[in-house]
Amino acid sequence: MKDDMELIHSYNVGDLVLCDGCNADGKESNGGVIIGSSAYCGKCCKKYGYDKKDYEYANEIDEIMDKSKTFQQNVLEFRKRMTGSSDGITRMYTWGDSSQTEKESHDENDDKPYHSANGEEFNSIN
Image (cartoon, rainbow, N blue to C red; front, side, top):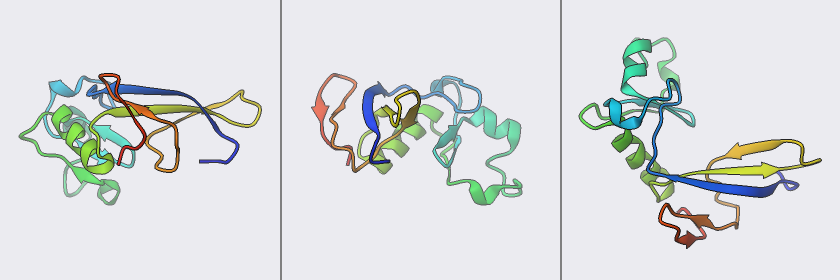
């Protein structure tokens, strides 16, 4: 995070999971993959072959998810492993002339409090 950035809003989506490819509800398919900071559902995996060993960019796949679990279950478990919380948290920042904003997921160095889906405040995701 840049020094001149200021947190203007933190939004907790709780256990909401949507595919970054097709925006489908996470309850509607099984499996999925993680590519960088994006999560793609089982339907997108099937359509584009993300979970196939011969996928052209297989080296960019960070995780192939369990096909016996819903995409939502997989993503919530992934969030929990990576951040200590299954809540999905989006933060919006301003910087410079405040005419631009940036969405950023969890930043361990930020001292602004998080809010869980049930309204409880905590200072760290880890």
